[in-house]
Length: 389
Image 1 (tube, rainbow, N blue to C red):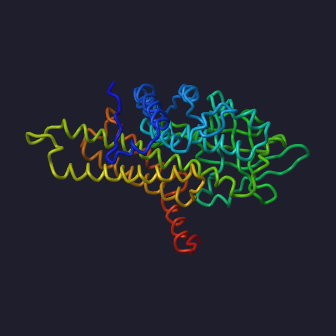
Image 2: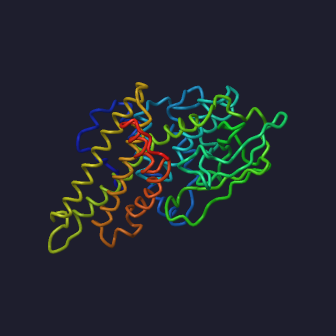
Image 3: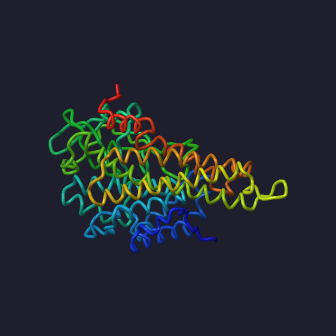
């Protein structure tokens, strides 16, 4: 096994602390040893390597920015970003698992939950002994979550949920779902545990993307949960959007991991592939592609590093996260497509990771806010004029 050496044309390494470098190198080693050797098989078979959950927990990759009292690593946000970057170098499905567990399950329980809810769930989620999912998107409401139909009604000492969610990462394997529903017309968060009567989570099949990730529906039919399962700190649509801000931040870093894997593969291939008596890396068109790829990776690295520093200082804005997610995923997908052209016909083989990353990035381009929605979010911020209908 050849250890991945990273892609760093502008010496961003020098901008990292010793602790941040250690975190990155730990995840990089984990991905090279535990993910890369098995991920093509899982992608081919459409299965998630669930045994990695506890291994990621042992290494502190789950809920890494949360307090140590819950068994978490208390990393800064740059370190968290580096975790997401390296996990996605392995596969978007691995980063998606950790991103959902951390930003969309552990974060809302920490931010909006009671002391009892935190003590009950966070330590188990941190070790990977429990798995969570986040239920916001619905069959008819993706980009417009405020239109959700899932609703809750108070019934004695319980809440009764009815409705459905769709495109839910980890749903079928989750022990707890953070579910968003309207209660008296206001969006609130609820904890729905696996096995609750009236709750089912069938897995969605037939995906050409994120095949090594579990994607599910969540169905609630007169699903009765105890009143203590309400997340009391939730108050309107702002609450789930705060969670999405955490997840999108991780995606902005993660996309760089996919881009680096594709660039590194294309560069090494171009140096060794001989056509017309010389390596194809010696041809101008190939070099132009490689230069484009490296330039966009470098720009993406600088963008998220500054965003991470702002986040650690509590000075970042949600629209800055939108810009980073929008830019980095867009160019990661372009890089994957260019890498495939450099590999030619070999680019479609699973001997190389490029086609897998390309297929995955098509989903990443859409989820956690589509490219177009993030465009309108940024546009509204810089013009002061809302373009949403």
